[in-house]
Length: 162
Image (cartoon, rainbow, N blue to C red; front, side, top):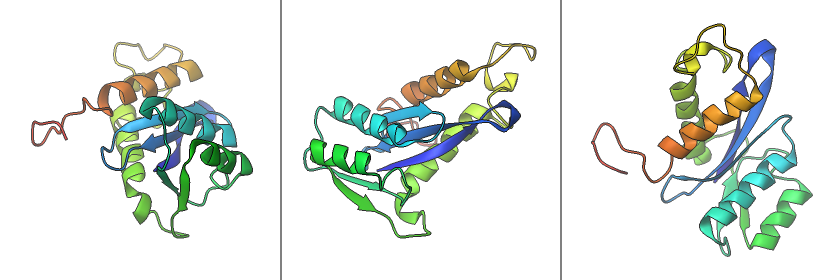
């Protein structure tokens, strides 16, 4: 399944994060960060998922009705990779709740109460005067995904792996 979220930056600017989660494992199997939000954002994330899994023949990819997921480029890539597309009901995020939950957790854990990723509090060990650019945001998000949302993520409440 997949979804897109925004990552707030300084001065009202945004980066967009597309993620692909494995429905069974709930692990991030593909992701992409870009600005602006175009079809290449979702196709790059699906390509990463294919590279991570080795192949996607027979997989079902579920998403919302976003324009990027309805594009010819995305449909063509799904056909090329042997992926069946599935779209959720209009106006509801319940069937895509795992991705919505992942994005909410990602923002909560990285922003930690800050309004955007330019805030020094989102980067341990930096001073408030430190500059923070798009590359820093990508590095911060990438490191959290690799560290916390892969097969090594622990369920803190139960002190075990999911």
